[in-house]
Image (cartoon, rainbow, N blue to C red; front, side, top):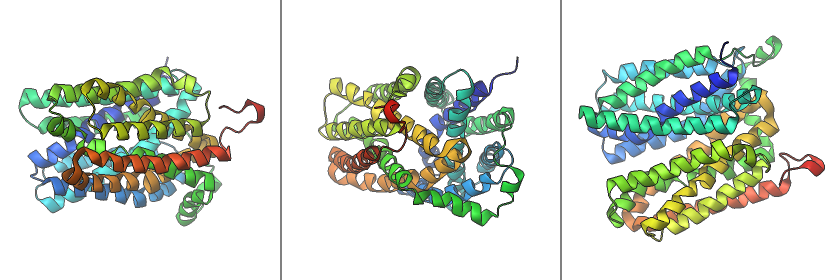
Length: 398
């Protein structure tokens, strides 16, 4: 029997997040050790890529809206990634590598909303459930990180970073071809000019609930920037923790995310999407405020477990909110608008300020992220008060 659409989308998501598990922790290391980038140059590459997605996201969404097959953006981005990683092997010099990494970063993040919405849509047709499938994808992130780390140590080289990303990119091309061919729009709708499709996508921002959502969730997610930029530095330099302890703390956070998505995903459906985003904002405010106080290791573990709220609950609530108000046809476009105009730029801006904050005030910089998360939480509360998504009369979730 051929694999179900739910299984196929789960496999593709696992491949994507295995690559993500290599890209996020090891791309800066690759740029420093292989190409000689300074820390400031690495920060510029990652931040500019984030801001660039504000342009690339809506443009890609408008292009994808005119395709007769939902797999079109999957093929576009995975082929760009594969060709780009092949070219990276032969490039040298800051300008050339900078431009290529910028393109690869935009392409990889451009895949994210397409993969996420395909997983949410197709898991409704059979097992595994969305929460369980997304948990498997998060587990694949851990596998990717661990595999590349072990290969780097075993080979005493950083080339496994490049080799792993090239392999994953090629496998994602095959995974995209394996996905079911789904129509996006009828033929007469595909004849709508590109400019009108772009305007229609950006027109989603005229919906006040959607706009409030993208900035509420975007700010809560962006508040993790200080942790990703300087969290390990604080634990090592200010608190004297060993590398193994730091690795354990990171794994605790990821496992909390996996556990929430796999085992509490269905239970969380009892709540409105906005309620989950509010819970995520509360978790973020508590987490960053406590981390600023340099708590002992025994308290760091439960604080890392709050990743289940600050990330997983916010993420799951956001996905369900988009699906509720835009449905299957427009969900990928809405995801790209969200990633491009809210999530990516706010996170990039937070990354840019996190480095100088750490240099000047150390762990106290977490309090700036508390403020960012608090603004997102206020917006999420306002969104929930509107009661739009999931409003079904007396059966409306909490």
